[in-house]
Image (cartoon, rainbow, N blue to C red; front, side, top):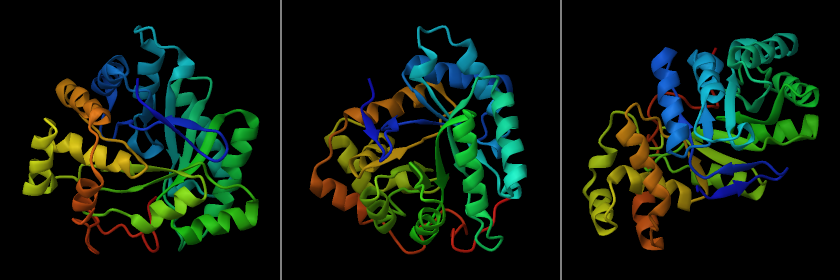
Length: 279
């Protein structure tokens, strides 16, 4: 059983989820089915990943004794559909693609502040929740200023904020803001992406001390700091390995040592939510 965390409005999520970026088609469905069988209950997808159908098929086909209400299927609204009417239609299409009765958690993928329609999009998500199209609602990559505006103009705070978070980019200020407001922080790319993060001698040494892998330590670090990491894994072995992170108990000194890898230019790409636009 994966431990859980709860947001301000009652949404309860496992502290570790399964990322599905680039997992598509039958292979994506098979990977997601295996993830469910292995123990994952939080499944992350997006309209722009073009895999809502694959994830939905896995949920519908699961024969592992997992009840539908045990699974949290997530998807995300793309930036090109922030206008209210377009957002509603997109959410309806997302639900149709999954083949499920509703999507459990729906997020705005990026704020796209130059376009400036994320509050309108948020209103559409609120409406979709009221209509029963989705369960809980949240955002991705929102800064405190974006979240403050949502609350000021709609009176509704997201229950989730999914952000880039890994040892090279610890996101201490955003984590503190989310925690203070009862928002669950999810971490995308928690293991880095094609860099040397998991080869750092200090992380390898901590892993050896816990009879764990470097990847498990990086995930355990995120969990210990109150984030919900969403690692993607194409192989069955890696999916099972990542689940082992919940059994790794890091000391405060070890958490601090890993956090010290953070750097101002720690983002994996040029994706600062203050200026980045995603469509």
